[in-house]
Amino acid sequence: MAKHNSDGTTQFAALPWRLSPGGTRQVMLLTSRETHRWVIPKGWPMKGRKPAEAAAQEAYEEAGLIGHIDKRPIGNFHYPKRLPDGEVLCQVWVFLFRVERQLDNYREKGQRETKWFDAEEAVDLVEEGGLAEIIDRFSGSYARLIVYGKS
Image 1 (tube, rainbow, N blue to C red):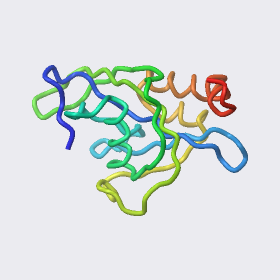
Image 2 (cartoon, rainbow, N blue to C red):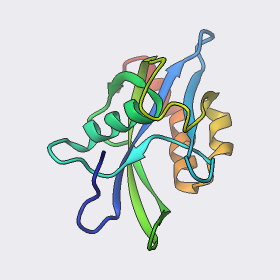
Image 3 (cartoon, helix red, strand yellow):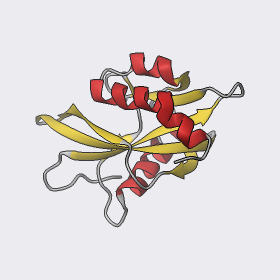
Image 4 (cartoon, rainbow, N blue to C red):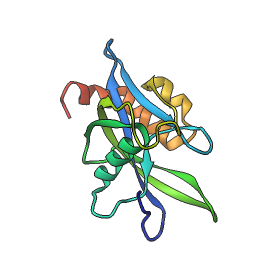
């Protein structure tokens, strides 16, 4: 399992995406285990792994996702992480993760719900404003550059 860094305030996340059969950009959201809010896979830094690798590992553990993760983050946001001894404000660095497939069985299956949404719909479902902004930016012209190979 991922361990957090010494100050416990930095996390890495994957923004899972694909193109629908009709060519629209879709984002996979999953529910958090405790509050059942729509979120993206994220977690603490992992010893011996680069930030993008840690984000990809979280996508694998939390949603059974296999695919390609970008090495550079597309943005970051802040959210209050609930811990046993209180809350800490975390900064989350987000990496685009192009999903190739989802496994039938994975570590946290049964603990979370996963679902694909059109990117525009996902913007309205996440509670963290900074994450909504990242998804909104992705659903616009930025995604067209990625989809058509111009980035």
